[in-house]
Length: 186
Image (cartoon, rainbow, N blue to C red):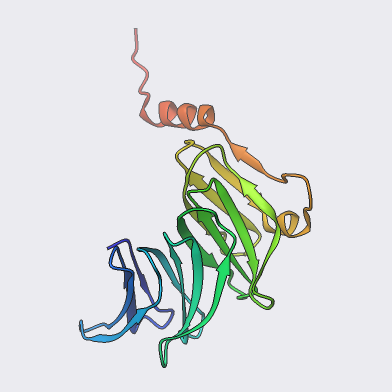
């Protein structure tokens, strides 16, 4: 298993893994549906607010939207050049954010099904990306040992400039030292 996510109504669970299949389960463990269509393992799943759709990110470099009622593929987003590691949908469902092993975070417009702005780049492979609860910020992290915080508004407007600020590894080292450091008295 690579991912598991409760539906917004908490009545179903979506799971995915290395067999490239998304499974939807009832709370009592009954398999409700199997969604097939990815060409490689599925690393991340998320739900639409109404629970009618599932989004999935895969090692086949794609992000897909599935209609739950009949397991039909609604659309495919292409743009990443390597494994999609993580996806999330904004609370207003206007945008989807994806993080990939190709070192990039991408923002997708769910009305046009197209990428918005330039990729937001890290220095190494990405493992995860999340949106803040107010939908204003994207946080992303990966093998470069940095967490980047991006303004979604700036990312949507950017054309050529990387618009971001991030917490460097030194800040994390400082935080780790501060939380684990217990001064001794001489």
